[in-house]
Image (tube, rainbow, N blue to C red; front, side, top):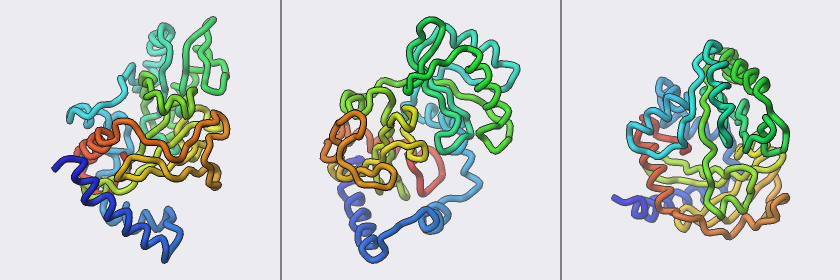
Length: 265
């Protein structure tokens, strides 16, 4: 069954069910989501498969699901100096803690000029800062003080529509899959406040998508409904997203890799 057929058959039906529930109980909070969806459909023993970015990426690659190119993996303090030397020759990359959450510890870096990289906020970053950050990641600063690894990936080039929404960061398309069916979707759009990271906890904007049509219909920033990006001036609502059917297909393929019934891809 194709992704388009699944979306038409189940996506609208599930969304109408949730809309009906919302009219009776307007707020579907995190606790309720965890009880009714996450805990009910996912076995805790499988959480590490998605909590660990490196492990999850390896599983996706084996299944042929596209991911951002990996530049390096820092597995401990003993590798920090070598990796920093390799990064000195590179531009446009992202450093992530393998087991971080909420966007904490993610550093997005652009082109290097005069020996310094720049973050989306314009903050200069030198090799000492990168060395210090990699060390912090391996010490577990962003992973509840457990030893961790750092994942360094190439900074991907977004489609022109997403680039227009916010050119100094990469928008993030999130599709919620429930038991192999696309349920809900949103685009997370970076802001200056979020430091170029498409993360709502860091100040990004959440934009809801009509999963049947791939069109945005609502945007929320800091708890307030908006229609225009406050910094780029681009309209957020009423935008048709490019290659929508392909996006749904990739989400379903990724969800099929791990034994979790409820998953945000």
